[in-house]
Image (cartoon, rainbow, N blue to C red; front, side, top):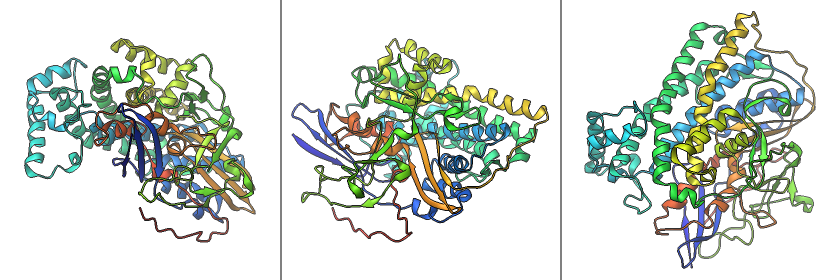
Length: 562
């Protein structure tokens, strides 16, 4: 038996360390997930006007900016009892859709695709055979021609000959778990390069109604400020054009690539590699109506599926959420083992590393807490949303998942895997993109009917509230306590906290750790399988680590030596 450390995990947001122990048969029997960067953010909310917290909250992350912004604004709206008019809901939903589509495609091609394709193998591809291969998965594949693939191969060769591999440096090229043919590798490498330009279109679309990207500025408590854009046919048409071009790439590149990967890696998917915890949660994605969080309708339903039982969807109770610190570098005063976010404490208690530089897993070993729903670990993210949607009978979700499974000739259990998690993100992109004409039509018809409202007045007041919804990486909630007109407490429980957290007091693993246990390793010294599974969650560790001091003081200074 041997321990292997992967630190840092690259191509993610933030700092993540993974330690695995591999048995004599080459299988992972223990895994530990650790966020190694201590970061403070919620402190700056203390004492501020609650109407300002959304703008500050979006700086928690440089990727999911809008989603933190929206949750922060919604948390204040929850405290005040403020509602927003239908037009404001439409514009918020259109920004949400553009941001999510942008995030999904960018995550796969720029952060995750190199876990599946071998760029060195692509150098030996036959451009004619690659063109024929692309035609197997779409009648009009994106940017597929002999001349184009020849140009891509030349560009890759120039990287290699220069000795400066750029984004392709540091890969596990030649690893036996790369299963695509040279021609398939060339197709994916081509789409990697294509998406460097394509992803800008959906980012521009989000800025049409958001004001700018990555940090939009049009949301306010009670509505949205981009009323003139929402009333302008040219701005609506601009958004529509940009998203049509983005979805063209999804239809002719992203989805065909998922079919290609699913075919090549089906054995791993059917073996359940990377399956992880069997419980899935969604707070509801793409809100279609106004009202309290649990009264709204969503394109991607909210709910919980336990033990992969698709016959039952449990409603989400916001008061059943708790955060544990049994294996985190924090303590709770009063002896509690779990605290609800509205009563959250963040008291640092760094324990250091073992003398050999590995994690002290008998105690705390991460700057992330361990969120639990009713004491249960859950997975959140695109796969969770699609499973909850499928179990809820959502017709669009059922259609794309059933169609994909039928194309490959695989059972639904295929999705309970690293491969399935990666595919689910692309299928969700299609569901969202296909709904955009309906979403735009609703805005246009409402404005045509004479409704030009984008803001509702409200009365500020003290109290407690929260904003809950789905970000690209999963279930995101912001929790707010207002006293004497100012913020007294602010907490954010983010997707990567749910997925990346360490074991809890009952020894239950979080989603990352559970997904790695049982994984066969071809070569533990080249842990491609570990990186592939972790990337399938799209980690965002910068969002997940927070510190709060109610007095606004510096709590402690830590210098970590490993």
